[in-house]
Image (cartoon, rainbow, N blue to C red):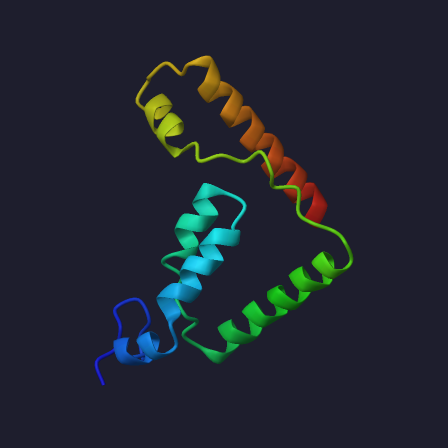
Length: 116
């Protein structure tokens, strides 16, 4: 068995049989932010039982919120990596970048308050 580079202990053949790339693509399709979708496409399988149990707990909590009609207020978050990288090199941001950064910070603040 030759393990996958992203999923130690799981062969490429097994991942193919499970249609794992398609599963990740579907997960990316339902992500609410560009960064979430990007991360979903390269999701790694948990490497240990404690990690699996932790992720199952998070999933159970998220499903309970969703079934209760609640949703994290993440809408408005954008991929601001290019703008923040430009600013970190003393670049000047245009108004549209500043609005996106402000909206993203607001979405993060609302989400943090939601889970507090």
